[in-house]
Image 1 (cartoon, rainbow, N blue to C red):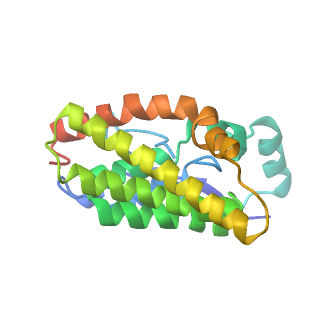
Image 2 (tube, rainbow, N blue to C red):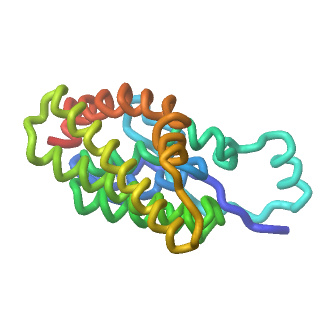
Length: 223
């Protein structure tokens, strides 16, 4: 018999109150993601997120093996994570909804804590560089959005600025870490990791995040 982690669903909107903006709402779904980059696993009929993390009851080892053989999880396929960048979504949204300080804190902690708990992504250099990258996403999206008119064009401008800033920070940290270990991080590696392999995720962010922010504003979940 072995214990394992699984997802359970709670209506955090209800638990936090109608006007509540619980940072845990965003923090909880930072773990529902692929190794490189979480999207909510389910939503309320009205669009409110329903998600959470719980410790499953113990299951026989043979049963777990059968599950792993018949249904491998996309969260353990690095190639999918590199393309879709799902971990970016909650951090960027946390910045828009909760503000820069929470966006920075949640973005920095999430990859490090996930690496410690699940061993993916590897702590060095991937999780460390991702921590700075996602901290930049959350901080820039939060602080900039507080300083600009909350129109759709400015939402796009804020999003693009945060995405560019995060990728530049990621590249800078990877370059420094490579220098500390005596290895190299050429511009071609930065271009591939920050842009070329992530094009599907970038397109999805540019389409979905402004729509989500607009929907949250209409629902009076944010200003």
